[in-house]
Length: 255
Image (cartoon, rainbow, N blue to C red; front, top):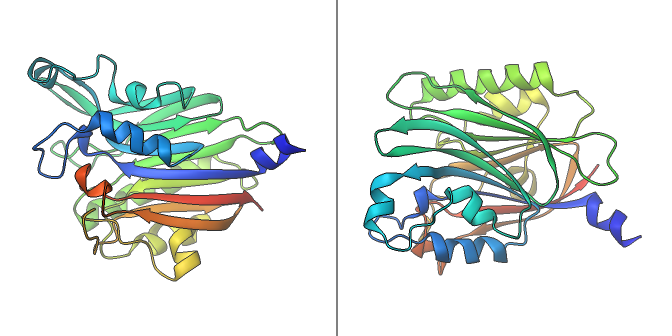
């Protein structure tokens, strides 16, 4: 049946949206970015550096969205969404978000910061996919800039998944890992039995930064309980006009 085909396959995207600004923050691009995200056709979207509130930007830009960025981006395409507030400052806050075409039945944001000057979190959502006996566990992350902090943050991710995600449940962990040294495989994938979609398909994680001509492999999509059908890095024109990161997509099928 068509509905069974639709829900056995998922299209996943992860994207660091740079708070809705272009690479050097010369322009606000959240409106054009929304159009590009829609064109990806993703069922579940993992977003990082999402601006929940920013009072100064709202005063400065006439067309600054009235809703939080995750709600503005979700609009009528992704019916459910969750936002994890991580960094809080005088003018507002930002964090991670998950947008979903399917119901998010439970979500929680866990603080995994290693010091007060770099706020980091993991957003854990449980999504009910039609026809699936288990919920889909989605963990959206944005890890620290220092290797020793990322190592501790990956331990925190592993601990949460070991504690709260059954071995038989489908699982996706995606986001900006800041992992130019390619250490997440040892720290996260092997302990949890995950496979990174680009590494599984092409032998190495994707080059995703900077978006104009990527050479650093910072972003990841890890999965468990899926077969990987197709992966793609969205960089160059027109993506280079938006965030400093490229968007990544993967089409996956329940194993």
